[in-house]
Length: 333
Image (cartoon, rainbow, N blue to C red; front, side, top):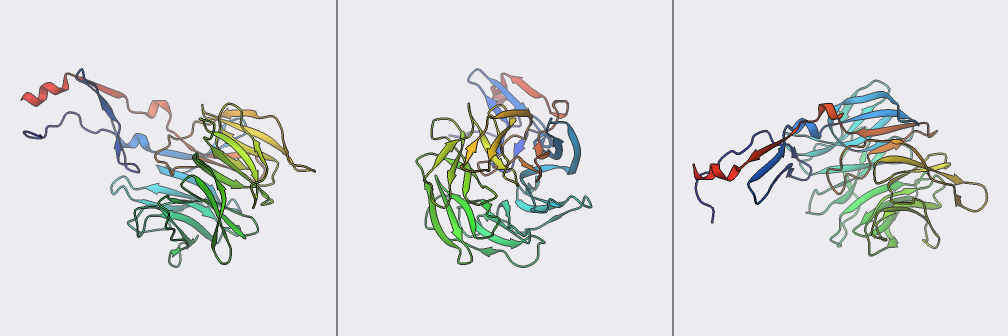
């Protein structure tokens, strides 16, 4: 039974609004640990080269998530959390004139933008009418209404993954399954059914293959399977991997290793499908994952020579962890 007045033990504790979680912990022995300052959760969207050397920074520091380059590489779609309201909306960062503009204004959570192949539309997830996330379509310039695409009876969230270059299929996940919509009817079709978690599905440029991450072995690894029928399968990563991205000319698959190293795997496009040896490129320093639908922390240029990374702040900018001993003694005052 709660008793007495509420007391302030420590102020300015870091709070992650996307998942309603504060960064503190207490022990049975009366020790309180907390990291201060909300600003530490901010990240930067930055270009780096194949050696990880920093190039230009895009936009201002913010609570960025799911950065996604437009097909013409002139814009970046992402979701940004407002630290005051904890609302999550879609934004566009223009790489030609360094401007940005908000795309969605609904009080629901709008996240995970995926581009149409011509760059005129985006598909995204939102919990507009129900507790679960569902798929919506919107013009990428912000005009027009958001159009609901799918109202599934399943309890799992509908999370967009990718859109084929020919515009015929949209890949999305629902719980532990990968599905695809056939356009223009937007008819749902089951693609890959598993008992394990699946994430980060990406079409190859040809649309004949899907690369994805799964924890079916007990740890996250990257795989490739045939599309639209998953009859062939290859393991891409060795020793763990997540967040696969296909180079847009089909010559490489990239992924992040468990320690945040960005890894390249060559793809043989002549004759039968085959993969080369994974090669570590650089330490990516991606921003910490803030929620289960904070899926992509980077994207890659068409030629595979530059990477756009949602980067965590430098260590020198991080707020220290504060410790308070015998904090329960305050309860007796």
